[in-house]
Image (cartoon, rainbow, N blue to C red):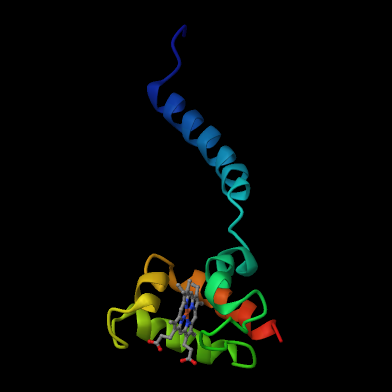
Length: 104
Ligand code: HEC
């Protein structure tokens, strides 16, 4: 009776791991739309009215999101925008689009 059953140890370890998971997940807060969009500000401005580049202000979130997907898919050619939207997940592009839809 000195040694516990090996299966008990596995169950106990799994229980501890499971208990730790939610805390770990909470620590990774995803960046806000505004933070993600800060990469766009240099050309499109913080208010979506860039100095010489296409105006984003006044567009709907779904319109901006659709345009970004087209850039990412290469449908608009290998230009500046194709480079800038590559690397964002769909969820991040949605956050960015939602952010720009709120600026005037
Ligand atoms: C280095 C400058 C630069 C940066 C940074 C940049 N853009 Fe652009 N953006 C452009 C240019 C230039 C165009 C026009 C390109 C074209 O039509 O092929 C454009 C076009 C767009 C369009 C299409 C607008 C329209 O009316 O057709 C959207 C939407 C857009 N950008 C969103 C973004 C978002 C979101 C980011 C950040 C992830 C971003 N851009 C970062 C230069 C930039």
